[in-house]
Length: 229
Image 1 (cartoon, rainbow, N blue to C red):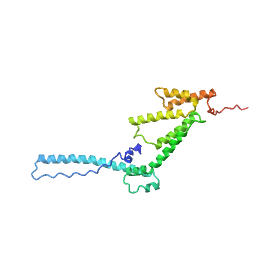
Image 2 (cartoon, one colour):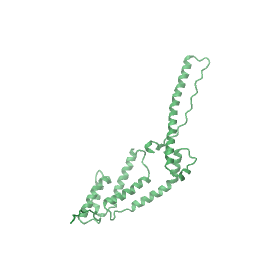
Image 3 (cartoon, rainbow, N blue to C red):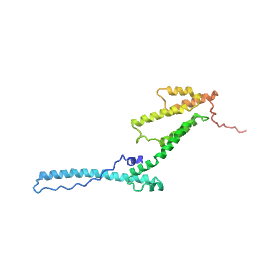
Image 4 (tube, rainbow, N blue to C red):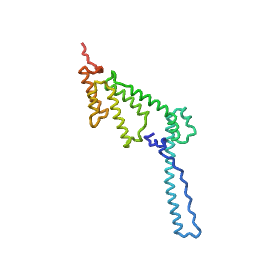
């Protein structure tokens, strides 16, 4: 929907334009001279030009609204379609669906938040634990508040940076106590690294701890090539 620039029809940002009225041709007074007639004709032509422009906007809105509605209806099951009877525009349909399922999504979001809060490294490697946390964060992103279209405004950048800093702290705090040294180094580093930038250091620290017999994480399984007798 967003790829076809139709998302604004669902959200209501693309406002329904009024249908333009065809201008009435000028009526000349009985004793009007050529200059008066010319002025009336020029005014009529200006109104016709404005009418043609407004009519193009109106017809484009109708055409794209029809496409948005068709895409929305084609993506839903029959039982949902029945609940949308009598709703004339894609925006009214989307608003109805959003209000109907907002409570359900909030409950799902809180359930995923609780799942994320319960995760700990335990016996997982740093890499496996990172995959676990990333999967939960991805679900939170899908259920949570959306960034604006394109996600390129300053407000979106600020919220995204805050989210990434929070997730770095969250991930590091769930690791084993043996990672405290590298954790402190990462959190005091300026500029502060992203989690993806911190992962190589965490993997290296895990390898060092394993070599020293400190970490409780079991070594990664390896495949040995056997020489036939």
